[in-house]
Length: 300
Ligand SMILES: [Zn+2]
Image 1 (cartoon, rainbow, N blue to C red):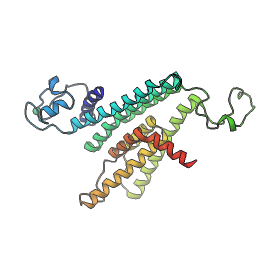
Image 2 (cartoon, helix red, strand yellow):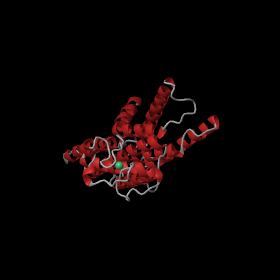
Image 3 (cartoon, rainbow, N blue to C red):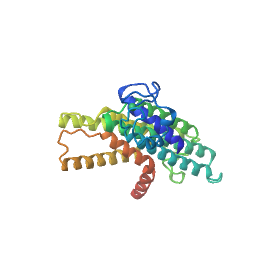
Image 4 (cartoon, rainbow, N blue to C red):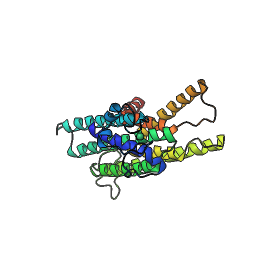
């Protein structure tokens, strides 16, 4: 939780500076109105904002409620991750192999990073309609790296599509050690499966984008949204990311309808779709695997 608050504080800096392509390292944190440099005691997550009642110590101009909210959200996200890690560590050695414990720990790491990035992207798209590559593309690369690390600890016979009981035994050259699975198994399934998912989602989103431009003759889906979805797929896998897309579009449509009914929007009003996709991604990261598993179990 404390680590999360500190990361949330850094995330606020990213949110304020990345869309403007400014460095997140220098200069140090300062008031946006008067440039007053913040002392450490004015830069304590959430607490300082409460103590200062949301105003700058020097000039008295308001400091956005976004700052404590982002810190709090990141803090809660890290608390969730910490809980997952505690559950994983507490599992007895008989219940889980060392390799799977490592894979699980990497899952938690992934969960923390994707939460940090999605909370940031949610706020940035809401405030500026921008989804910086520094988050989406870097995030995709980090996710790919974590998946490759997980593949190292994956056994060669895991992720078999066909169970040994009903597998086809091929007696061709080179098949001697394989149980007869016609699809990729083990580490290859982990890496290439995720890669295929990223390509699939990207192509799907690019197709929707092209179709929208063809029909409506204007931009509906930005390239940033496409990169955001690719990043989510890299972190979460195909099922949860499709769920995020579905939830995100649903929420954005709902928000659009509410704006229309209140007369606050017309046909050409721009919605921060990326914010809703990121929100869908956060929900999918937390609940996606559970929902996807029960859905696929329902299909069988
Ligand atoms: Zn000030």
